[in-house]
Amino acid sequence: MKKVAFYTLGCKLNYSETSTIGRIFQERGFEKVEFTDTPDIYVINTCSVTDNADKKCRKIVKEAQKHSPNAFITILGCYAQLKPKEIAEIPGVDAVLGAAEKFQLVDILDGFTKKEKAEVYASPISEANTFHNSYSFGDRTRTFLKVQDGCDYSCSFCTIPLARGNSRSDTIENVVRSANEIAESGVKEIVLTGVNTGDFGLQDGERVETFFDLVKELDKVENIERFRISSIEPNLLKDEIMEFVAQSNRFMPHFHIPLQSGSNKILKLMRRRYQRELYADRVSKIKALMPHCCIGVDVIVGFPGETEEDFIETYNFINGLDVSYLHVFPYSERENTLAPEMPGKVSIKERNRRADMLRILSEKKKRYFYEQNIGKEFTVLFEDDVKDGIMEGWTENYVRVAAKYDPVLVNEMKHVRLTGINAAGLMEAEETYTEVLKH
Image 1 (cartoon, rainbow, N blue to C red):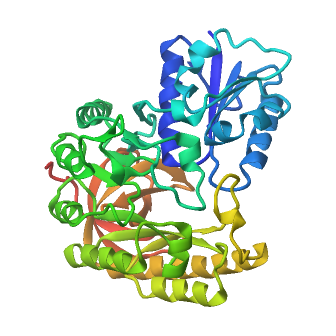
Image 2 (image 1 turned 135 degrees about the vertical axis):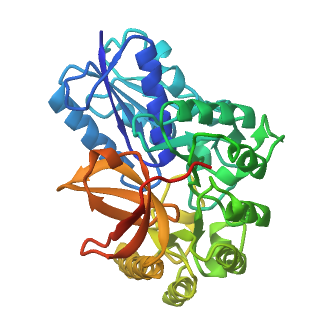
């Protein structure tokens, strides 16, 4: 029995796909092992969102060769679709598979026999037009379930449409079936993932279902305690979705909404499909419906043409929003996108300075949000990550709670009162009663 190990770079979507590819190997008689367990085959799933994808890929290949010098090394994922020939030149790489090929790799690489030169199987991205059902498996408390892939948007900084193709989705029937399969395994929380999750419903280029339809059907799935929406564009976060989540027992009061800039000038240069006024309206509506809701924000700083005044406009805009945390990215040039050709390039040093400012703001926002929840009662789903005798879990509204490790608590829902923030910035809590009633 050949042994195979996996390594995943990037987003939750990549994790869901790696996990599914792992199950394909196991169904074919391969043994899935840890990265360091001298596997016969390595599968490395790559990301292309930032400019150090090449460096990370090379480093992981080098580490793989240290642990198992004769292993067959396969690279797939977004970076593999964008630069297959470049990756094939990395010493130690045996095969590179593009977006249309990655789920067929066991058949394509039959036998996993090393050749003199790396083999490249990467069709044009137009051929990545089918949807492959995927979900992560192995973390008992939370699963990432892919419901949508690809993107029809053309943001001037983003390579994702080039790496993953056009927007396409699973059917509601299939997603519900997957959710039920996941429930049978004992998982209690599902995170819905996609490239542009709110665009769910496109099949063969036709809109046949909507994301709101999906949310309503998943809300009926018994034995899944919690659903979270991983990320949703502000222009696709409709009133009906927010109103439904506000009264749902299963969809958590937690939204992650990309902003990217608080300057309408920069949003236009980025080719985003909204202005900051719409974003502010979405935040205001959520907080009116769910005052305790957690709202995460993606922001890019140092985009071409972003002056100091534009950045301060973004900073002040976010500072005035009732949001809970930020994911901050210094702008990173990507080949075959419009942004690198735009005037007004911002130095790397300045990009990093602006990013640091927003990260400090994020910490302040997060702490304020946590402080607003002290003294309130929530349900925590505890996870099996244990460090120094402490285990952690999440409330419905995405507050991270620390507790003394108790094996009985793993993958259990406990009703607690939040009591204060510890030195590590995690919430502490006291149990109010032991059992959480089922829906």
